[in-house]
Length: 199
Image 1 (cartoon, rainbow, N blue to C red):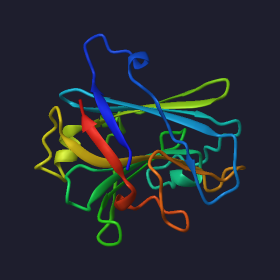
Image 2: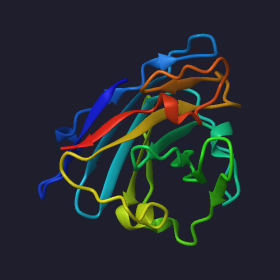
Image 3: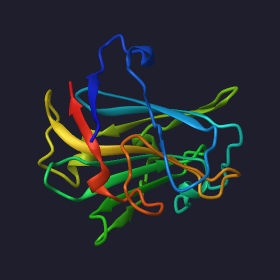
Image 4: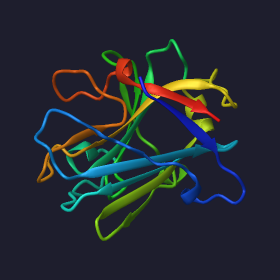
């Protein structure tokens, strides 16, 4: 299992100061030249994520609140805030900032969450010469709605994984930070989450 230390965001914050990790595990499809990196940091209010993809052919079809971003080019963050609890939150964004938020256990009682105000996550997408970049925030108050015992602090460890997929892109792909061990495409596996630790 991989471990990632989440750096604390300071007043002079710049993404250049946050280490990037590559989503280097690709399974279930033929190799593609898509490459993805993720950065994550935190402060007293929440976690901040930045995904960057080198992706020549970007699919961005879904725009509505009940869209399915994983069919498009899609960045995903799944995390279980409390050790010993199989419930997790999944956040999936396509380039139109169409978001799928899910909550629950892997096989039972999963629900889709609808945000009345997407600005709470402050998603921002920019296109580059070689692909696209997504940044957003995960407020701790949002996590505490489902995990009230979650108390962010230095040294706290929890579980999570970062993904890139595109079920209906021209080059279907599935990439992960921590290896996924299922025989077919399935990111909903807390058993395959890595360790995330607040600096």
